[in-house]
Structure formats: C-alpha cells, structure tokens
Image 1 (cartoon, rainbow, N blue to C red):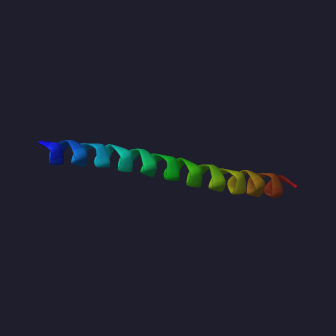
Image 2: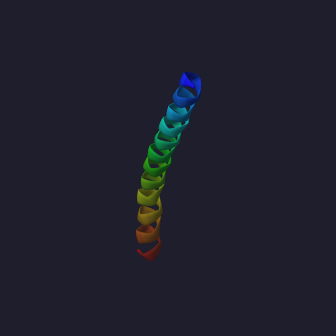
Length: 42
C-alpha cells in the first residue's frame, strides 16, 4: 500500500514538473515568434 501511494505521488509530481517545463519553453519561443512578426512588418 505504501509503495502505491509513493508511486502516485511521484507520478503527480512528475506531471506537474513536466507542465512547468513545457510552459516555460512555450513562453520562450513566444517571444521569438513575436520578434519575428515585428521584424517582418518593418
């Protein structure tokens, strides 16, 4: 029972970490896309 609870906690924390990393990567590339759009119009 203890192993199952630890497994579920680990899966939950891993999913939360993956969400944070993916959001960070999307925000970084959003700035680059915005800069390219501005440069395209100039």
